[in-house]
Length: 213
Image (tube, rainbow, N blue to C red; front, side, top):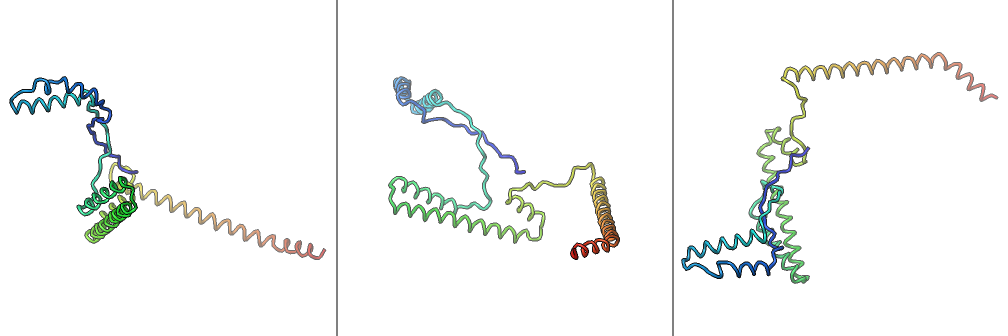
């Protein structure tokens, strides 16, 4: 079972839905354009408050719950810089549609993939080297990479003594069951052997008689 997804509350505005004509009309009729103050500090305050009021009117703040991005421990500046170069090359290719720019983008994309593989491999090798004498951390990291739950799989008990007794009862009952199965198998084999000894001569004579007829 995987750990629950962490969500973060993010404030945003839908700027694309703003009507330019309505926004311009309200701005033209605002105090900022019709009666601006002479004092510079007051003008800055009025500028900020006017734009905030207009934004709150035409694109009010809404809140969304988004997945919180976890930072990988192996992420580094080299990967970040390579991704920036890849994104720049992609934008240029999509803008020009030229083959040469597509090839540049493919090269930048392959570079990002190569660097990520190299950095991840180096990180995990160092992790294994530094924790080679700690099996608990090693298994915990392995289960985490495989997306498995690393919680204890032991049954819930009130004390360690009860847990020991539960395991003892389980293995004892399993051992008894296995012993009973072995005895039953031996018993069936003995019955089969006994029946074979009793009926095999008669069955052999019947087979020979049928062959002679």
